[in-house]
Image 1 (cartoon, rainbow, N blue to C red):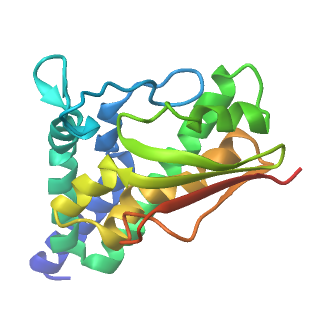
Image 2 (cartoon, one colour):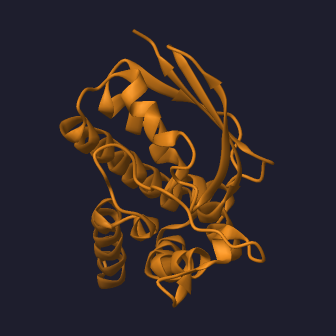
Length: 208
């Protein structure tokens, strides 16, 4: 093997090992309570809630752009070094592992791992700092959200990293999160803002 080929292989191995360990930068937007990530929302009449300054210095949009900056550089490096297909594969692996870790962490902290406990975190106003969403189905076995604005999707799109890349980096984790919280829970979805649809339709199910 030539030294150039050896160098490329070593770079590939390095990036493959680094991707699963890379923190999901968008998580800097929120803090994790026992169940759920985001609580509450601040809003002013003349500004969209994504643009309202927080802590007198930054809006949620500005925080999102800042918190994702390093991760976006990392994604672009993966694209350059490994190509689009391998980048998407690694990002899917990373976000899947992250989804599982969040579900497991919440299961440990929650009072129980029931379906209603899990879906309670998605009822507005939770996540309203970064989403515009409404509940369209809510019963003992099914809970569906319709999301019409997502700051994370907007941030990725503005950086030119929406579509399949953004879905692999962020949205993919949603499938692994509920099942790690409780093996009887799952999520169905066939539309996302990240992929260019007009809304996301997260539908959580209790299959027990």
